[in-house]
Structures are given as structure tokens and as C-alpha cells.
Length: 629
Image 1: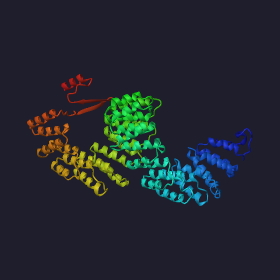
Image 2: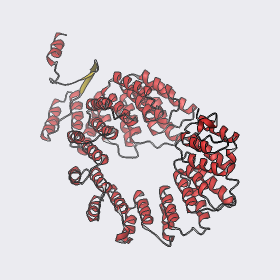
Image 3: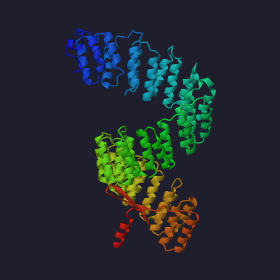
């Protein structure tokens, strides 16, 4: 029990039941709805609820609490016992406190506008803080129409030229993506300060209009520019395709730099694939934070230099979940999935790091690539035991992992266990069914989506078309291609056209596949051409395959796969001189085909094999067994 049964047990000075002192000492101890109910009963029976001084203190104590029941009770007390009594008051302090509870992190920012309207209708003085809180609520909720109404009300008051409020308006329009509205307010301001310029520069930078941001920057006096101004401009330039040199110039011109300045430049160098420059900056910077380290780790991983990435990771003075996630993602991107899982195990053994949803997404991706379904089941159990929601990307990743590991039953089970499914969950399952050649079931799920009024997107139809291709359902696939355009108004992309070409090719209809490619509204990519050539090889259609293969070699002369496909076509027809000529040309160009490989999982370990591979530690036993068969 929070509330004492008698005043004697509450206070050594034996305050009377109606005294506010014992109750005031209880306010900071309240945290739950049960505490609120006890407190409400006490202040009602004691009459304290009618004490204006006490109720004001209660509202101010509870209104900023992180506990939702306390905030709701503070609002109740305010509206019940203050809002109707303060109609003639000039002090909006308590009103502003209530507005702030809606505008700062509240789940209902529109409530701030309701309170502001109530203030205005009841003649309570609106000060600059009242307006700024209302504008913040509009910004938080994206309430552009309501923001214009607040702007209209503000323009009729003595505060219409207040620089602070004008800056709030500029910032609001910028955050809502209305940079031109922001510029109109900016141009009409009778007085501007550094915040005014920084808000407009930030707005232009975020909209990609760096030229206009630079015009404002050049129009500022040197003493008006601060670190935020310089960092915004540098951030804008590094996002531009050809802006890195300009960013360098500004960086060198800066009168002072902070961590944001250094990290922005390093991030720009990484984005533009200038890892040597990024490393030079990293070595030169006076201090580093986690952002600095993670940016470099991510940059090296994306450039394929996993060793450098890991070296930096090992050098970090302090690691957190984000840095571990970055290193694991780098491993997975470069095909080092086993190393990613080892790092995950190390992370779990660390006492100061708890895997988050991003960690689990990366781990599930690694498992899917390795096909280690047993480990996937263990991660699934971990997800359930630790209360992670499957309504978002984690559920999608689990369905995808089970599908790629060959356990479509588990994928369906996960799908059915998710109460709030989004289109991504449906897409993951349909794509999984496609991998397993279950075209009819994929269609059934499309019908179920229709029944539940879930609108499929372009990814849904890629999965469906792929499912039709794997299941040999050419007629159904063509109907599906037509439905996506005429029923769902989706414009087919190159992937959809590729699926149709694949369907024709699998069905042996090489001529129709070629005609379909010629009808495409855009240039086919090399994947589509290679699909057609492979079909020509399988079905020995020399007249279509040879000219297409030669054309593909001209388009991508450095791709060994194009030469191999042409060579295979010749080989399938016994044209060995032509095979020799193509292979010779490959050698002259120093082109080597990446060998195909197969792998199996045995007792939790993945074993990989390729043609004439003798690197396996048990190679002698393997070949001995093969020879005895």
C-alpha cells in the first residue's frame, strides 16, 4: 500500500488527515495506476482535491512523469479543477505544462492543440511558450494544416515578429518537407539570427538543394556562422555525387571543428569510396567516438576489405551492440557467414551487450546463407524467450530463413503465428513457396491476401511469377503478369520480365522468350540474356543462342559467364572447334570462371566442395569412399 491508513503512521509530527504535507511526500513515490487510485481516494475523502495550491503541485509533479497513468491523472485534475477556474487568469504556466505533456514525446500531439484552443476560448493569455509548444506538436505529428491555423492565430498577436517563434515556424515547415513555406516565413522575418539561417540551410540540404543552401551560407556574416552551419553545408556536399571536393574545401576552411565535422567528412569519403582519404582523416582526428569507428568498419567492409575492417574492430577501446552489428553485417555482405556467427556467440558471452533486433536480422541472414536450420531453430527460440516481436522485419527474416534452409513447414508455422501481418510477411512466404516449387499454394496465398484486403506490391508478384516458373505453370504465370498490371495498376519491372523469360525458357519455348524480350519497354539486362542462352543450350536452339551469346560478349566482354554459355552451346551440338576457339579467347583475356560448388551440413558444420577440390581436411577418406562405389 502506498497511501497510509492513518496520519500518525505518515508523519512524525502527527499532521491531521486533511493536511497536505503527508500526501505531498507520497507524490514522488507514485508510479502505477494502483498508486494513482489510492492517491485519488485519499485526496477526495480528505478534501485536498479542492485545495488549489495542492492540486497545482500535484499537476506539476505528475505532468512530466515518465509513467503514463500519472500523466493522465495530472491532466484529469487539471481539466476538472483548474481549466474551468483559471479563465480570467493571466498566468499560462500550468496550461503550458499540460500542453508540453502532449507536444514532447506524447502519443497524441493533437491534444496540445486542443488545450491551446481551450486556452484561447477561455481568455487565458497565450505566451511565446504556448505557441512554441503548439508548433512543436504540429511538427511531431506532421499536422501541417493545423500548423497553418496556429500561424494564422500567431500573426494576429503581438508575438508575430518574435524571432524565437518565427524560427519555430521555419523549423516546423522544414521538418514537414515544405521548404518553400519555410523560405517565405524566413524572407518575411524582420530580424534573423543564426538559428534562422541554420534551419533554412538544413532544410535545403535535406531536400538536396545545396546551391540555395550555399547562397544563404554566403549571405551570413562570418561571426554568425557556427559549427552547426558549417557541418550542415559539409553534410550537404558529401551527399552530392560530385560534392566531395567542395566538402573538403569547406572542411579545411572551418575556423573550428568538432566530432560531427570529422565524422561527416569520414562518412563522405566512405560514401565516395575514398577509403585512403577516410583513413587519413581517421588517423588525424583529435578524438574519436563510436560513430567514427563504426563508419570506418562499415566502409572497409563495403569495399571488400574485411581484414582491415576486423583489424579496426579489434582496436576499438570500447564496443557496443552497433559496432558488433556493423562488423557482423560486413562479414555477411562479403560471404563470411561463419565468422559472423562466431562474433554473435562472442557477443552473447559478453556481459555488457544484449543483441537487438538488428543483430538477430543479421544472424538470420547468415544462417539462411549457410543453411544451418538447427542454429536457426535455436535463434527462433531465443527470439521467443526474450519477447521480440515478429510483427516487423524479424518475422520476415525468420520466414525467409526457414524457407532458404529447406524447412517450408516451419516458415508457414511462423507466418501463421504472427497476428499482425504486413505485406512483407506475405511476400516472404510466397517467395519461400517459390523456392520450393509450390506454385499452387503461392496462388492460394494471393487469394487469401485478396480476401483480407491486403494489397500486394511488386515484390509479391516477383514471388508469384517465380513460383509459377519453378512449378511449370506458364499459363497461370502469364495471367498473373496481366493481373498485376490491369487489376493492381503495377508497372512491371525488369525482374518481372525476367521471370516471364525464365518461364518460357523452362517450358522450352525459346522463340516466344526471344519475342517477349524484344517487346520489353526497356533494355534487358545480362541476367535475362543469360537465361535465354541457357535455355538455348538445354533445348539445343543454335539459331537463337549463338547470335545472342555473341551479342552478350560484346556488351560485357569482361564477364567469363558469357563465354562459358556460348562454349556450352557449341559443346551441346558437338562443335568442338568452336568450343576450343571460345576457351582460347577466354585465356587470352585472362578470364576465369568462378567454379561452382556444393555444400552439406553435417552435425552443425558446413562442408563445401568444388570440382577437383582437395582442400578438405578429410579429402583422402572422401576420395577413397568415392572410388569404392
